[in-house]
Image 1 (cartoon, chains in turn brown, blue):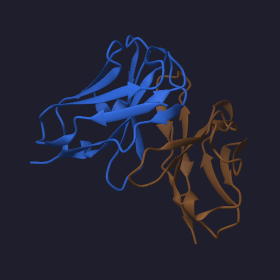
Image 2: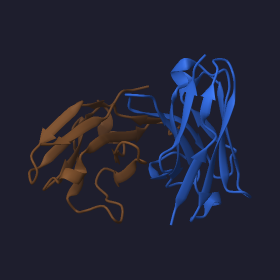
Image 3: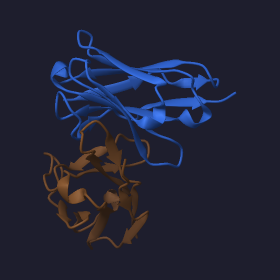
Length: 108
Length: 122
């Protein structure tokens, strides 16, 4: 198995840009998906297949990937974006799902 | 509108069994694989199992050591998680989620609201 590495916490001011990263040596060959999870609520898919945004997700949310790192970028951060964010991939055999450890986004 | 409602959680003693259910509506249930994911107190999301659209293909996290078994009833649009030999570290909120694909895990496009809490304690 492998491990997706996420920075435990990121803090930004409202109106600025938050970047949440997910690292793994072979991530360049995998599709990366991102979830937003607020306490007491169901997680929500915000980015799938590296860069695609589900309907209903604001354009402020975008995904990218370069080298060994995938990045979730949240532009013009709002107080309501405060949540835990998780990256996710499937292993090469597509028999296991792996989540990153999560990043807590704090809006100052 | 996709709706997933997990139930069956509760307080259980170590070594006992519990069966969780997840009732689905608002989409073509038989066309989608389903997952169970849990979150222990203060921890992150942990994937547990994927079940293909017809239930014939099942994948499990290695950490479960064969103690959990997933199944589904497409007639009733319910997916189950039979949890055996429960341990204290199985204490968590359990979520069910819908995969975008029928046969192999891809991404979890919809999740059940809130999940169901399982507390394993003597």
